[in-house]
Length: 234
Image (tube, rainbow, N blue to C red; front, side, top):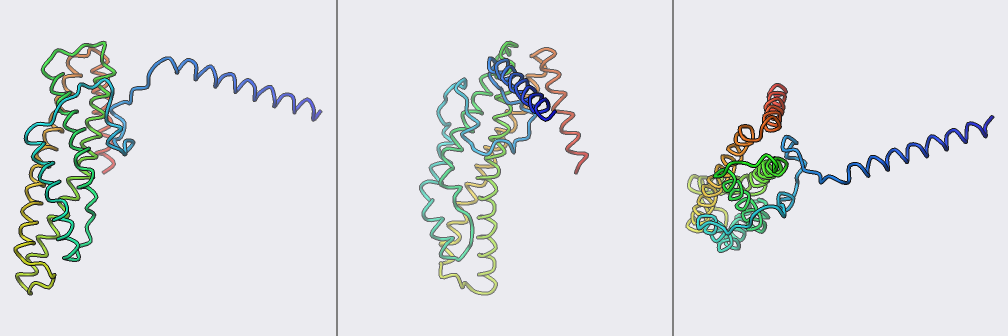
């Protein structure tokens, strides 16, 4: 009796293996395109927001100037914050060029398609572009904009404290204010870049809805429903 049960178990395992193999074979023929309604938390690295299908563009003058401000003042900002005993993560300055280049390229790719009539045959690429742009904006916000704001806020509070109770930092007020001005410039330029990318992503979303037929409308409705569910949870 035990031998019969054993053989039955082996047969069941073999059938399961065959079914799984067939499933992989069927799915392997089509390239996986991430659904843009997936939560952006699934993308953790800015490099994941790139695609070989994207056009390649150069930075705009404004984007180049933002990177230049950060890179030219990187050591000054780090030195000032450290000397003032402000425990602030400054790693964002080391990754800012890569993040800027990738988000800039996504922005310009979206503009390229916004200026044209969408081709329904490229529907999967369009929703991939939307998803990657949405995710890149989230990464830019988390890894650059928020740290810049935190740095600016803390150094502003330190300057206010120094004026009221005396400077106890070992760093001159002039040096603190100069660093504050640099961070303020980076903060404003970063916010403008973030708004630009978010606006472009929104435009692409509506364009997919209006120009990609029923698939585009279904995709758009899935995003609307997901946003409603998220709002209801908060």
